Length: 212
Image (cartoon, rainbow, N blue to C red; front, side, top):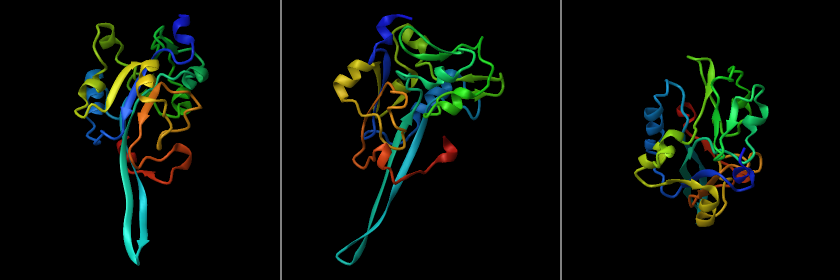
């Protein structure tokens, strides 16, 4: 593997602006359409996260609730746990740092699915093997952007070298309902919603579990 992409902070990733996302799922639909994914498999999912309650202000009960959305796909992590647990080395990393499934090696054991804190690898029962986002490798090979990025009407998604994204937008990647970023060091940067909660101080819940 090229040393250019094994060093920390190298390779490609996503920037996601929670303040712009309306939960329309255009990114999710574009991914399904582009890859012709079967029913039940979503390489990109839009999670609705809600919480809050009531608070007393001058003897008046005032609602103190929030909802925000997070678009989630494979983050092509710096320490991809899916690769670490794969017994057949089917989870593979390209020279550009992106992680993909080598279908010739995959036996569908689902270890990667259970280990990934983002739920990125998904089992395709029709073929008995795993599948996942490869950051639209075919599009990128001809200079185009991933389908999800181009489809977002709010321009809440960006893709590029993770070092450039971090330089432009910071390093935040631990906003609930996302997990502790130290586990896999995701190639992801999030601009938090005004009501965003940190992964380790989360009090809300996922409001649309059946959709993701």
